[in-house]
Image 1 (cartoon, rainbow, N blue to C red):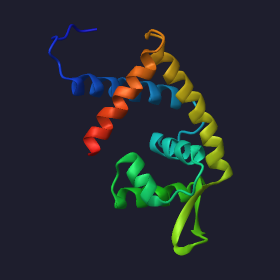
Image 2 (image 1 turned 180 degrees about the vertical axis):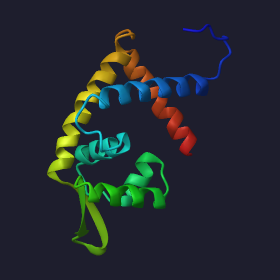
Image 3 (image 1 turned 60 degrees about the vertical axis):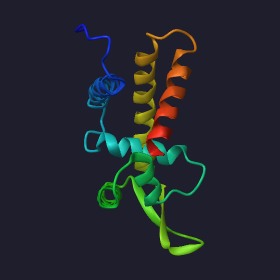
Image 4 (image 1 turned 90 degrees about the vertical axis):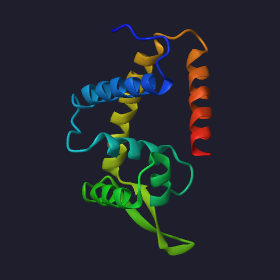
Length: 147
């Protein structure tokens, strides 16, 4: 690892960490049979799986910080790939809730494996309790950035 100045910004470290995580994600994901799906598809499927409430396109836009056009195009492609379907909400037919299809559930299983491997790799260098401290600091920074 290159030596870095002591006054390097937090944002620089976060960006470098993000680059390493993406590289690791791609290396783990490319060894699997889901090459036709993007990592973003995987993350969206994972998000949908973990929710205990109805999820709509607007929720995807907010969770992943993407605009409406990007979310719409991505979700349409995910529908074509058989990962999700859009179903009219019972309370308002104009709203389309997102539901996972069997292929989406299969992709979620691969996502779980990748997430566990990345988490293991990242946390094996930390002392007990440091992972939770880091997550809390990240939550506070994101909350502050979002106002």
